[in-house]
Image (tube, rainbow, N blue to C red; front, side, top):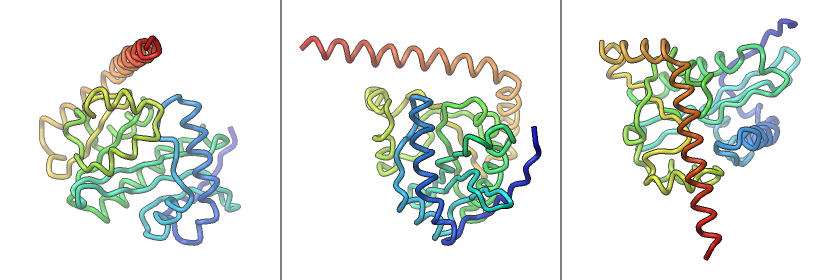
Length: 225
């Protein structure tokens, strides 16, 4: 594989020219996975760029390669690194890991006391999060900000989330708490998670199958009436 050097940096207003491409790729990627929050408007992405709450990856020639942005919830008590996306042609270069590292550092700079959380269905992202200091948690450990959960309405699996009273869905919740980063128990948990990642992936697949079957059964039942 040919080596490519990427420029990964905080996005600025000048990067708004890539907003439409980014949102289109987010939607296509979500459709391909069959899960995830598919829709973000170009205007929303542009706002994040202008506020300095996003990281963009470009090739040396200026071609867009990847993106991620920051959202703050619960009056800044919680922060999410959202919308991680890598252009298809650059998905074999470890770029997602580099972008996650940069957006994590930007989040820690802008919100040093905030808990950073994420919802993901991807084992690769779980591994990256774990390396950054996240631990798996229940949905109850995340923000209760209704505006955050409204963002799930564009996900194809939102009915599962609603049926579980926002306490479970296909995504795995992970959390970085700066107040607990040196806690012995958390360090041990991160080590165990990384050690048993394949088992956790298997459990995630089982959970997905169960929840999707429940969704299918419910839909069939409703169609009878």
